[in-house]
Length: 288
Image 1 (cartoon, helix red, strand yellow):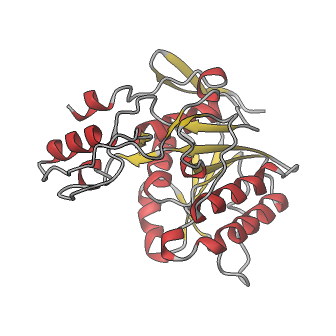
Image 2 (cartoon, rainbow, N blue to C red; image 1 turned 90 degrees about the vertical axis):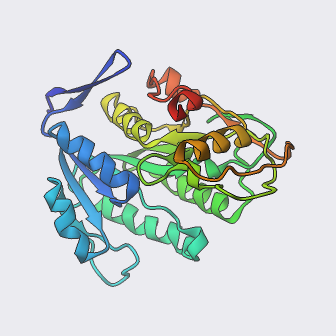
Image 3 (cartoon, rainbow, N blue to C red; image 1 turned 60 degrees about the vertical axis):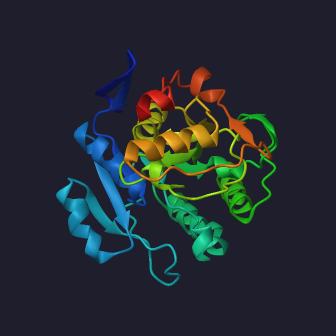
């Protein structure tokens, strides 16, 4: 049985992580690698996966046990040692824009097969608030997402795949738009003109809160949930991105002052289950 003595704190709330816990992160990209570093810093044993042999040394240099895990390699066995862990975090994007979206659910099925052959009982699947259609209302985990885009439909199918598993418990985290190191929102629309829907609210989350939210799920043993993770401040696009461009010293974007389809993503479970307090509470303060 684990002894719980790895603790961290956010906004006065103390969370405890298990000593001798092993976490495997399937996909050490922008979020996955940052999360892995945070876990290693707390003394957690971390297995990290990549599809490129060139990245193995990078992972090892960060104190992460590196693995090559390629879910697209149909005839290559997946290393069972990677799936021998207390928590598996799946952080691989569907890559719909590059045409790989159709294979995403199939890849995740391979991961599920490996999980069912191993010792994993707790899984965190990273999804996106892109699963929600623009419904001109505030939406939370109890709302019907009504996905109506190719990427949204793929994300929902992936979530459903995990929701129907009985051999392990999955918590699905739907992140908002990602900002943080290497993802400067000031660059998103800098210098562009006549950008539509300038009055639509933004639904964003900083990398620090992505990590904090994930740690809170593990520390609270909050598995078996769907959770939205989005900073609870939703300024209009024109205000957010104009100030972001100004901070970055870039040419201001020009938005059309109109409100077409929109959504505000909120969370019931972030409050009721995790009692999570976001590090970024106001985007204008952060941009200032």
